[in-house]
Amino acid sequence: MRFLFLEPFFGGSHRYFAEGLQRFSRHEIDLIHLPARFWKWRMRGAALYFIRQISNLKAYDGLIASSMMSLSDFKALAGSNCPPVLTYFHENQLSYPLAPGESMDLQYGFTDITTALNADRILFNSETHYQTFFAMLPDLIRKMPEFRPLWVVDKIRARSGVLHPGCKFSTEAPGPALFDGNRPPLIVWNHRWEFDKDPDAFFYALGRIADEGLDFRLALLGEQFSRQPAAFAEARRRYSKQIVQYGHVPSRKIYHQWLSKGDIVVSTALQENFGISVVEAIRSGCLPLLPDRLSYPEIIPGKFHADVLYRNATDLIDRLRYRIAHLSEFAGMRKELAMAMDRFSWPNTIDQYDEALDDLAYIRRDQTTPNIP
Image 1 (cartoon, helix red, strand yellow):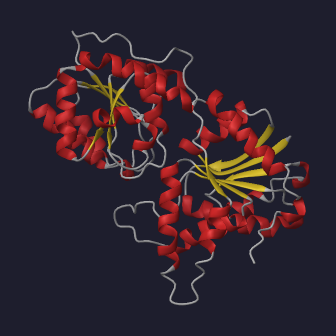
Image 2 (tube, rainbow, N blue to C red; image 1 turned 135 degrees about the horizontal axis):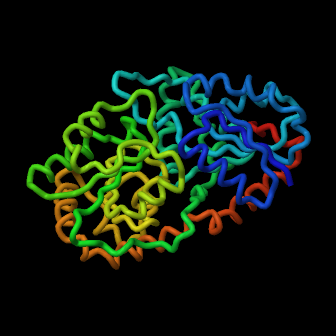
Image 3 (cartoon, rainbow, N blue to C red; image 1 turned 45 degrees about the vertical axis):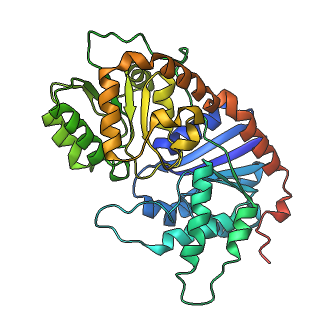
């Protein structure tokens, strides 16, 4: 069958997911997208762009769109030509943390609501994200001074489900290279260079370790934008001797090469609905240190929670100190964790996505508008 994927924010995990689905699905998927910038304008205006880029909506058995677009606007413009729609929530605007100096703009949370009501099927990228969304949804509605439509909670939940995004790993077998005890461990940061990944907390922990005289190398990877937290420039000065890679690398091949050289991957994220970068690093053999919250308890097998998930900043520093000094003790754990990440690979997840698209396509076209009453 044939589907159309509309991605208003074609970067990071959004691009990664769209391209992966297009490549691995047994269906034909056309992709139309916009650059990953000006997210607020994308949510409000992308529908007006996309509607003029599609020559024949009736040629598609279904439509896929991320939640970074007002689906209600798009369907109003498309009218009866619109096929059934699956909306994929990478994030939502009800629970996303505010940037420094930013205040909550409730209209974007309500755009999520109307998009969800206009979708025929909704998928969240993790159970954690699903639960967070439905925990926050009544709170947003109760901000209305009167005539609160709390009925939307059950309506949205009835068409919602969870599917982890597929991951494209290197072709090499999972697991770490043999650790050379003659060199200091390589610590990897491969997250976006933005406030919600809390780089200040990461570099604070590194600073404490460095002050104690422990030696390490540092690879600062991850997607960068025109504005970056000041912590990275400060780290470049302080850790000039330890940094072996500073900044986004030009290809996936080089990126995976750095991950395969890594020994420890650390997250200090304030917001993480799945964690593709962490999954990739673990699959490449990095030993993870992750906060005991967000989606991390979901993606890490339960038997490793006590070893991998830290409780607070002090706990992170203590665990990082020990791993740097005793990395060879964790070789078996690194191998087992790497193999466990294979469950997120596209070959192991694509059948579930294709089944979801099959179900979407068989919805009667004259029933694609939401049956609200």
